[in-house]
Image (cartoon, rainbow, N blue to C red; front, side):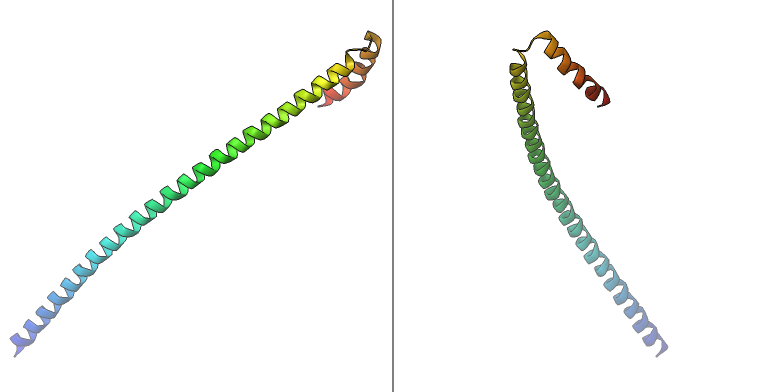
Length: 104
């Protein structure tokens, strides 16, 4: 009878070890699947962020061009308005603007 109980205990231990090993295999497979999904998610987010970055860079470049065009246009108009002034009038304008320019 003791041998019978011992055999049952050994058999139960084998069953438990087998179940534990099956669970380890299942968990390894699940972990690999999660890693794969996480990697794909990271790749998708990275691609989305690259696209957003490229769009933002293009928008910023466009805005900078528009702003530069406005500055050049305004400067050209200002220069045209000053071309008819004599040297004394230009000197007066320059002398009033120089302190403000130096402070910037």
